[in-house]
Length: 142
Image (cartoon, rainbow, N blue to C red; front, top):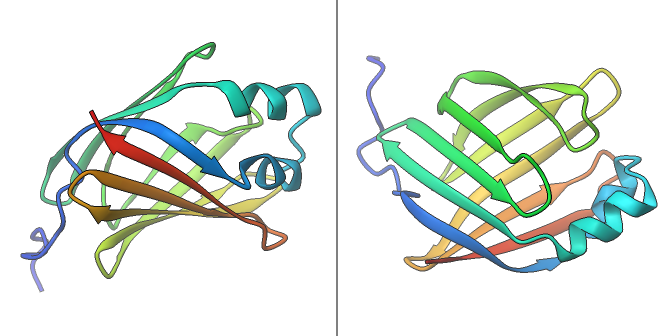
């Protein structure tokens, strides 16, 4: 099989702004994130600016009060980034149906993030901690 973009790959392209978070503080608690960072995360505004060419993703994350991050990867591959707690994480990516699955592994923990398009104007990040705590971050297209 050749390395081509899936014919039915959904397009995550666009600029997305965080609208609401569900259970995010509990998720961060499971990752041993301190109280002050957890409280700050509740009020931070977050945007994802995504460009996509088939399986090639370029995600610029902009968050108030932090330096944000830049992810550039091919779905099916992996990349390295600084995680919530500042540790270096190896992130492996794959398609899970119409969603992009990310498995984040640091020296101390592993968690999953699933990027899903709920509709043309809603992107949901489903997070699951090592202890099974689930959180959702819901973004709307700007």
